[in-house]
Length: 140
Ligand code: GTP
Ligand code: MG
Image (tube, rainbow, N blue to C red):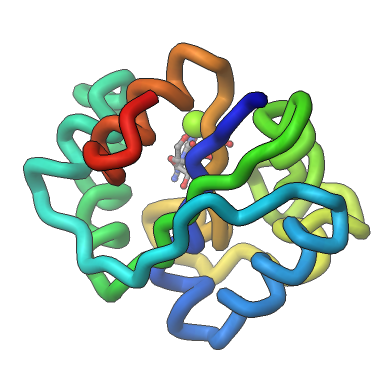
């Protein structure tokens, strides 16, 4: 069965939306395989966001992700990778469709990085890689 790595980013945890995100995941029918409140580290984020290194938003993104705890979650279910991306909505919360996590709960706060509440793996390869980074004990 497919697994995906989901993060409730520091903005979501700060705003008390962790439960709302988990509620939507469970309401959709996916299973929680792991849930842990964590403070990221620069090393962990360098691995997690390796594909974005060098982009203009990389520095602010890492700084934002270090600004408070994140809820790291592994979800499980058929096609849960694309399913969670669909629940999350578009990257930019201003234009993310209503009905989605970002569209219903997110907005532009006028800061350097898009604070968009959640992360979700974008492919089976990313999911395996990211679960290995956040939950090495789970294996792929
Ligand atoms: P994730 O699920 O968090 O990976 O979001 P995504 O897959 O929709 O976006 P992507 O992987 O392309 O970018 C990772 C994160 O970097 C985003 O979620 C945003 O927080 C931030 N980001 C991406 N693109 C931009 C951008 O063009 N400008 C700014 N300021 N931030 C961005
Ligand atoms: Mg991404």
